[in-house]
Every structure is written in structure tokens, then in C-alpha cells.
Length: 250
View 1 (tube, rainbow, N blue to C red):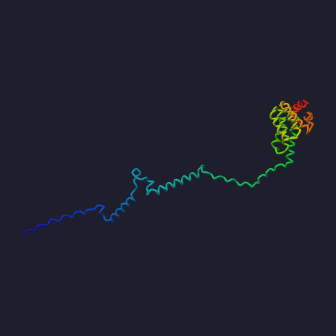
View 2 (cartoon, rainbow, N blue to C red):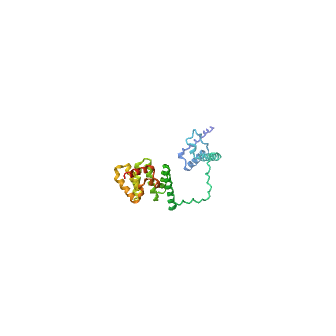
View 3 (cartoon, one colour):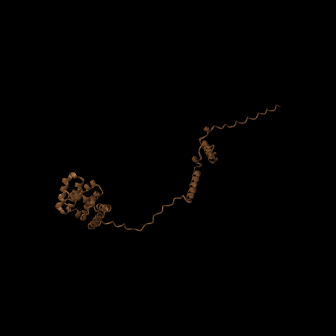
């Protein structure tokens, strides 16, 4: 009897082919993406030489770097506070006791100022008699500067004009006497002095000099006496000499 021929075993089934990721089911693709992201999150960061993104800008290292900078700033602050370079707070000035402002100086009454100006005029005349013409100029100048609003200052300007003539400044002396003859119209002394100096310094104005002396004689005839003028009116020597020359004409 013939033996039945054994059948060969069936070939193994071919391994199942794994479709590419693009053919996975949508839910399977989402699960794979989550696994890859989790693996990257726990993976150690690449060394700085191989990293494509600076560590300071990486979100994984932003917090540690910020904490490190904060600790460094705190250390610097502690060092600075203990150093002599630390700025000291400006000292507040101690409150000074309240003081009343000094009272304003009240101007002297007119009577006191007039007495002071008259005293300076007397001091100037005494200096002329003593031959101290520098002191006389200072006293006359003090009256003009400090009491220029008083009528006595006109007498001081007259004295200054005679002292200008004494030191040789004839032009300034004549200008001053002409101003005083107008300001003190009717004062015999101003007209007499202007007549004497005009005749001596400007002979071409003899007629005007004679007119000025006539005006002086109408108010006070004593100016025809040169000795009296030198003694009582305290003219400096050069002005007295000019008056003597003018009086010699008559």
C-alpha cells in the first residue's frame, strides 16, 4: 500500500509592513509626537560649542541665568555698602535760631545832614588856610558826593573850582565857575571869582570880566578888597593873586 506523501509545511507569513508615519492614524501620530517632545525635554542640553541657540536665550536656562545675575547684583551691593565709596547722605543743616533782620538804616534828618555838610565845608576852608589843598579837595568832594541834594553842595563845587585853578587846571576851573555863576546868580563871590580868572586867563574877554565884577559889586562891595577875600572867603593863593591883578586895572 502506497504511503501518503506528506504535505510540505506552509511558508511563514511575511512580516507585516510598517507604514510610514504619514500613513499612521491621526491619534497615533499625536502620541508619537508627545513621546518625542518628552524625550527632548529630559535630554541633557548640548554643549555650548554645539548648541545652535545661546544659553541666555534658551527657555530652559533663562530662569537659572536670571537668578545668577540677581545673586551677583546682591553681592555687589553688599560689597559697595561696606566700602568707603558708599555715598553718605548729605548732612542736614541744623536749624539756626530765628534771628530778626537788622533794622534798615534810617536816613539822617535834613538838619543833621546840613550840619554835617557845613562841618565838612569848614574843614575844607581850614585846610585851604593851612595850605593843605589835597585835604581841602577831599572835604569839598565829600560834600558834593554825600550831600549833593543840599544847597550847601553848590558852595563845595565853587571851592573845588578854585582848587582846580590852584593846581593849574585853568580850563576846568573856568568851566566850574561859569556853572556856579549861573547856579548862584546874585552871589557876589561867584561873579567876582569868574571876573578875576577871565581877565587873567582870557584877556580877550576883558569886557565880560568887567561886567561880572560889576554884578559882584552890586551885591557885595567887599570883593574889591583882596586881603578881606583871602582872610574871610578862604580863597587859595593863586585865585587871590588873579583878583589882585584884576583890581590893579582900576
